[in-house]
Length: 202
Image (cartoon, rainbow, N blue to C red; front, side):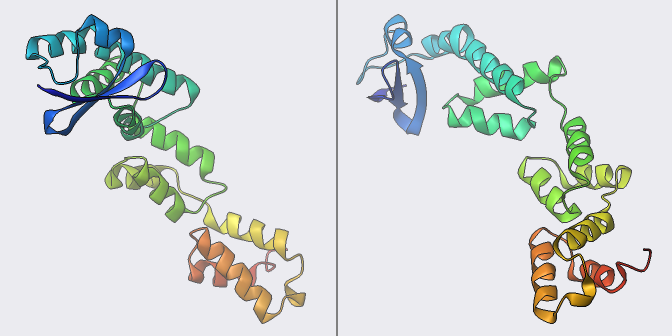
């Protein structure tokens, strides 16, 4: 590989750009140790040495640090490593290490997420957020079948908080409530149904 450019990122790190748009972020000590210089070739042998002796360990430490800070899915960790300019080999190694030692499990993450959010978020919102975090649609569906979201209770609680008396709510206020709940992912049908009978059980 040809080193086409070396650009400083901060006082300690530099972005090393190789031909074919391949980029690494390395410390100045790495550049010196592996004799990485602008305009020079970087051999495959040296690259493998850099991977196994430096980047694999660094990527592993990075994901362990991220998990210590907060629970994350596999896809979220991969995005974080990509943002840090780790190469695919180092990302695969770090994720493989986490799976081998059972530090990550997306299904378990999804169950915990639903359990925590099922009383304050709509099913639609939970589905969207879990998909954005990288969970498979079928996995999300199975989790929600196991742990249904009580949307009716959430809608009732929101309406009672915003409007203590339905009798005093005019059409404009009703529309505002429906729009607010719709933005949270609740369906118009569910909200309208509950607005019609919210105090029937009082």
